[in-house]
Amino acid sequence: MSLRYVLVTPVKDEAAFIRETLMSVKRQTHLPLRWVIVDDGSCDDTPRILREHADDVPWLTVVSTGAKKRKLGSAEVLAFQRGLEHIDPALQYDVVVKLDGDVRLPETYFERVLERMAAAPDWGIVSGVYCEEKDGQWLPVPMPGYHAAGASKVVRRQCFQDIDGFIARKGWDTVDEIRAGLHGWRTGHFEDIQFYHLKPEGQAMGRLSTHRFHGEIYYQTGGGLLFLLLKVAHRMMAGQPRILGGMAMLWGYAVSVLSNKDRLVNREEAQYYRSMLNRRLAAPVIKLITSLNT
Image 1 (tube, rainbow, N blue to C red):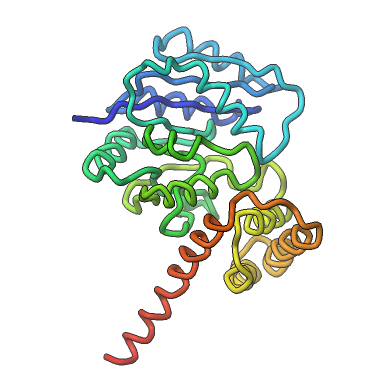
Image 2 (cartoon, one colour; image 1 turned 30 degrees about the vertical axis):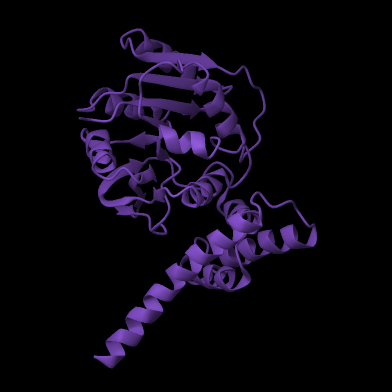
């Protein structure tokens, strides 16, 4: 039996992409019970486009926050929470999905993802792999094995309740996975199920600001220094822009340390997060040692 799901989509000035998201959801082979799109103060044609589509889809509701200014890092979670309020808690659904308004999904996306979740009841938070366009090619964006893409967070309802939902702070899409793991839920993504992220990450705030933002998040979610240095080195070699991307990330982490910013996780959660990162770091080392001994 297929899992039943609801969608909540926070949007802000997505007129260039929202049509593709709307059409790709409407074409799904497994449709949602409800879809709430929350317009968070758009200044472009987004509201008009949403109204046009809402008239034709009985399970689609469009609401507005009336916001004029948004705080990056928390605005989308606050808008998501607003949308969730418009879904009747008595509705019999199994999964809640936070879906961005700048994605294109294959027609079988939710059918395949939910089949995997139904087959393994310990899956708490999942997604497919998102692809972004680079030099005319759509390429998958690498993610840690435990991570689900923030643009398509597919969360089992019981897991969502166990972790008390998403925290309205920078780093929410790491904190949710840490807390889910501590409650015994498995988190991650399916490599063979892909979707398309139409607006490259960092476009909203700029690439350097995004790297600095990631450094702040890494500190606030309890990351350790060794893994940070590896991430910084990787961004210096492969990030955009090179060198400066890694330096910006290190700067974001350093400023957070020096200003003694509050952590988003407690000591137990931070230890769990570091253990996940250490396992990820250990895997290629073990593989290398094994290959040398054979």
